[in-house]
Length: 193
Image (cartoon, rainbow, N blue to C red):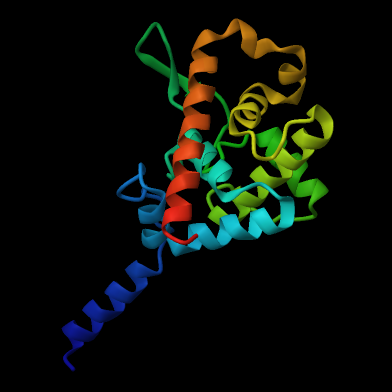
């Protein structure tokens, strides 16, 4: 094998070991397609369902709304005078769009300091933990995608105060999450998952 060919193969191998695949699956409207394309996602969500009791379809609908399954998703930039970037809208990051403080609370409570928001298994475990706490503190059923999305978006304190009631746009979004969860539930049942 020539020196050039060896170098090219080595470079190709090293390149393929680089960062993760943070792109979204091709068909976000089809749960079976997502599961086929990214079996690791399904394994992570099933593990979370077993550990925390949050159904796969609730997790999928929430991740779809939060990040569209993009592992390194960030919130948009804020702009001063409409043109000068001055940071992001929040510290939300990754599949679950967890905020820095909430993520650190999860890492501390679960004794999982190495957990990362851009790893699907950590992100789904975080969501299961958060939704489990929301069920205990707020009485939201783990099957209630709409309620969990509202608590997820507003925080548990905001949810308890009903802050979402003054945000008609958020009520529309939470209903879309519930509708997508129903769609994913039916689709997953149809593809034997």
